[in-house]
Image 1 (cartoon, rainbow, N blue to C red):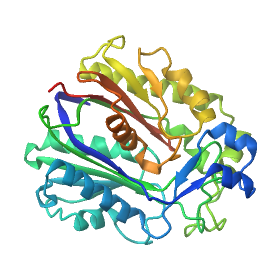
Image 2 (image 1 turned 45 degrees about the vertical axis):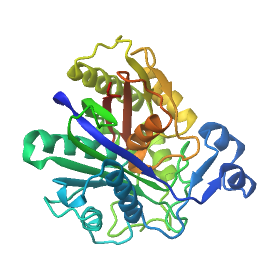
Image 3 (image 1 turned 180 degrees about the horizontal axis):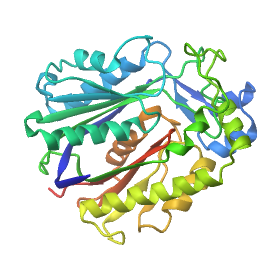
Amino acid sequence: MRLGNGLGIRAVTTWLPQTVETAQDALTRGRISDEDLRNTGVTEVPVAHTVSAPDMAVAAARDALAAAGWDGAALGFTTHAWIHHQGHDFWSPAHYVAHRVGAVRGVPLGIQVMCNGGGTALEAAASRLLADPATGTALVTTGDRFPDEGFDRWAGDYGVFYGDGATALLLHERDDSADEFTLLGLSSAAVSAAEGLHRGRDEFTPAGRWISDRIDVRRTKKAYITDVGLDGFYSGVSTALRTVVTTALDEAGIEVDDPRIRLLALPRVGVKVRRETYHPAVEGLTKAQIVELGGRTGHLGAGDMAANLTAIREQELLAPGEVALAISAGGGFGFTCAVVARPAR
């Protein structure tokens, strides 16, 4: 997506519950093995015992609006992304978030494309701002919660521990005097032939959790790997990842060897998954340092990209004028790369 002079990320925030569960405790209780712990490399995850996923998104949005000094009523577009149950079966969490932050303009958009929802939602917001400048401002939220009743956050998937949390990002016309980041490039790609990793051999069912009491990602992945194998998956993912990075940089007008590209942030999945799936595709593609920022959160569902941008800001990992690449990925499979710079005041 060509963004012209770029768009401004006025504020980006991550909201996490204060309660955590540690990987060591999960190991002691027999929920994971030593091998699981080594393969994942996550020490703890945040756990929301009472607050819902959409309410976490509302909290993140309110924090972002406060940081920006914006009024929710002025927002021209809102979009909310998630991967897991939002608290009601037949309902629009996107409208709930908009209602709770006072966003009365426009039609809220819900995004449910697995873990790349945050990247897809950012692309939707950028598209809306470019297509209709009267929109003015956009809010992108994510929110996910993985309670034990429906999802085993520790052992429900291979090489991924799932944390509860939400993110919010405010997008508008570029203003280097106030923005936390400048969004310079944005590109997405899909490997739809790999959707079976999350379907396996399961039949289509009439209602949620029909086959098992809790979502079991390992079951579907094991069936897919047995039937299809992973060679085609790895090849397709590698091509898609390289494509989104090079395309986003090209559309931002930045060469891949530009020394301003300081770091590349990967999705908050486990160490083994990152090193087997992501590193071979992106290592050496640019001069960026690959940073892994989810050791104390685990995977935040649709929120990894925005959470990584929050961490980059909070840890001051970019100097003014430097560039970061943030990659979002999700089952289906879909990938998005955002090229952001820290404004030089």
